[in-house]
Amino acid sequence: MAWRLRLDAALEPFCSRPLQSLQIEVLSALRIGAFQLLVLDTPAHAAVSATVDACPPRARPFVNAVLRRLAAEGEPRDLPPWIAQSHPRELWDRWSARYGAAGAETLMRWDNSPPDLGCWCPSREVEGAPGRYLEGYRYFERSGRLDPSGMEGIYVQDEGAAVVASGAASLPGETVLDICAAPGGKTAHLASKGGTVLSIDSSVERMGLWKENARRLGWESCHPVVADCTALPVSSADRVVVDAPCTGTGVLRRRTDARWGFSAGLLARCTAVQAALLDAAAECVRPGGSLVYSVCSLEPEESTMQVSRFEDAHPGYRRAEFPAPGVLVRDGMLCIFPPEHGIDGHFAVRWERMS
Picture 1 (cartoon, rainbow, N blue to C red):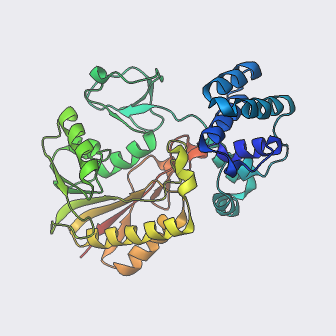
Picture 2 (cartoon, rainbow, N blue to C red; picture 1 turned 60 degrees about the vertical axis):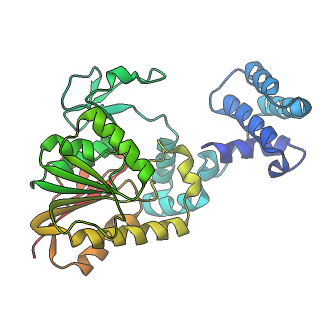
Picture 3 (cartoon, helix red, strand yellow; picture 1 turned 180 degrees about the horizontal axis):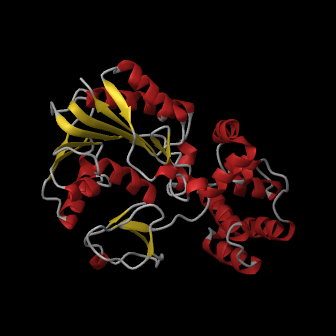
């Protein structure tokens, strides 16, 4: 639960024993009740009654008492911002040092906001608001579920991801390696430009999702391969697109629980994998061809610092402007900051191989 840090801080003053000592069913009931009271603003009688009725009978008096006190007295005031916005302290420390306290809190508020729902739909008309940055993108209302019969010719993704993929797809070259391709968000754009796309991923399960999308969207010139993406089974291509695994700090609004997995250890593992992927991909680009690297992270270790490392290690590559709307580009690189640009946070860079 994304709000658990704030909810636990609100519940703790009214519990007679530590929250972590409670049975998981009881703690979950308390958090659900607190969520209704504090985040959804559900009327107190309804939130307490529904929660008590749903929890184990033996725990009902305890849950009822705690939630009634919370409803009557409210949550503590002046909580630290990372608790009030329910983010790990480590992210607050990193972001406040980089963006300032106000900027960090704005970013955390963004992470807690409901994500937009939209799609890339270049080949058909779809009702909805136009994209902020891309033609062929549409936003539509959430209706509880998507009708599968209306999914032909569209790929549901955030506009930030679509900007990255559209930019990569616009580059010249007949043969493309789509690395870390599953479930197909980049392939949907690459396939629309013609040529031959070899989509590679190390996960059999995720490539199953890629194949389902390929059948639905008719990716006739795209070929799936399950392989180690750091030991590529292809020697050369005109374009290589590396959509690398990352900490995902640019898309926490969409991956609500991923915030709790962030750590210095995860960051170090991701940057090591990213470096290995880039070094392997660099060997496959033909002279004159393009290499694109992207992550959905806001962390400099995974973006600008990874760029510097690559350029020091591969002098035969020259950085070139990433093809995207100018407001999203800084120093030739795509740098999307969610609260500023209104879409998920993504980073992308393009290099041309000189020799």
